[in-house]
Amino acid sequence: ARSFTTGGGAPRARRVLVFPLPFQGHIDPMMHLAGALHARAGLAVTVLHTRFNAMDPTRHPEFRFVEVPDGVPADVAAAGRIIDVILAMNAAMEAAPAVVRAALALSAMIAEEEEDDNEAAPPRAACLVIDAHLLAVQRVAEELKLPTIVLRTVSAACLRCFLAYPMLHDKGYLPPQESQLHMPVPELQPLRVKDLYQSKISSHEMLRVVIARITETVRNSSGVVINTSEALEPAELQKLRGELSHLPLLLAAGPLHKLSSRSTGSSLLDQDYSCIGWLDTQPPGSVLYVSFGSLAAMDSGEFIEVAWGLANSGHPFLWVVRPNLVQHADIVQLPDGFEEAVKGRGMVIRWAPQQEVLAHAAVGGFWTHCGWNSTLEAVGEGVPMICRPDAVDQMMNARYVEEVWGVGFELEGELGRREVEGAVRKLMGRGSEGAEMRERAQDLRRKVAECLMERSGSSHTAIDEATAIWDPPPK
Ligand code: UDX
Image (tube, rainbow, N blue to C red; front, side):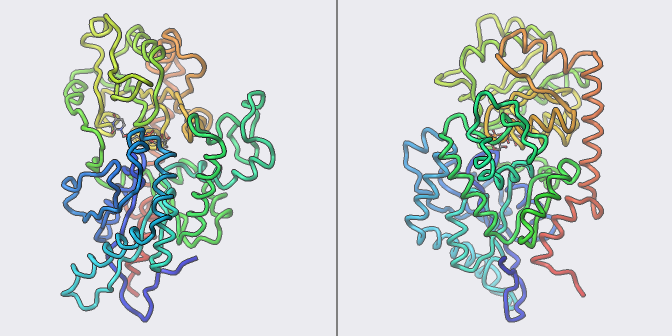
């Protein structure tokens, strides 16, 4: 494990560099962590970013921004498939490490210039916090003797699954066989084969490569911060601490969006705040919020069934229909007669201020694809869920929602309007099942909130532990 001391008794640098993977579900937690380090520990932050899905620096005047050439070919960038972008970016950076080295050195030198008048200031940034997908960046940081901390933007259970990937192949759980989908995986309880991390669009071999690189980045780091909570995954965290016992730090600091300001301003799409005014007109707990994150997509037939299922359920809803929600469709069109049928009761928008929506008193349920951020945001507000996982870690997140925390259920099988209508009524209706899930969701929200409490909460002390690296407590 790398050491954080700057050597020679020099004081520690007060700047941290952060480099998120340029996708929404990865940018948000990194910016929240940066916000928490800045606000709580007074650390200066430099954000390294790519041109692909570039962030808008004007929304973060408190941070410095440095662009790192990403080398993603135009056609890969245009298609925007996450695994292809990750592999292309890493390949380009490995082929031209000098480019990354220049950006990292520049970021560290910015700290030097800024603190010129402070003779005691050390010349370099203290540390680089990277997304686990950025092995190529970590290798360059290593050459520069810049320690890296990995931010894992998914669950502890997911990290355990990644570490176990070779074993899962050796024992024949993977690649998944149709006949074994419901088979339990006792090594990763409560997961079944169908819950394991899988891709719909990339080959299993490609996925193995990506996961092997993630585990290498984690193992080579000076520590891992996981966007989870001791209240959500105590057993998984305990096992991880054993499995990664060589790491000096393994911290559960989430949900990170609860530790820094509500909005990071890092949304890649414009958030439509008009929905908040509409929610204000709806009775408490009455609205189902429907959103499938930034990447999941459905076919046009499913889209029509979802629309009519929502309409026929009779419950108010707020539905995010982002431009690329429907596969192979340039323009997403709602079915004829739909808007008339849901007038006053349903609202459709391109992109929501999701955290504000989930925190709104009118919202009583969330139909989600179970991306980890969406799951955490719902848990943080005590909102129960209908889960429709699509790929990657979403199946295991749905498993925890249903089986471990009991704050929702999975809508499995064909996506027909009757099934949708039934699921909405089950969650939002007056029946006992929905009521029990609502109650458990509130219990879980309270437990997670305890971990976020000033001083005593485990997520708070995790951030303190991380920042103690920069600011050792006075003797
Ligand atoms: C991806 C993966 O798909 C997911 O499985 C993994 O856990 C993280 O990376 P994504 O699919 O975008 O992320 O889902 P999610 O993790 O839920 O993140 C979406 C983010 O976009 C959330 O923070 C959510 O608040 C935000 N969002 C979503 C909006 O701001 N507005 C919206 O309308 C919808």
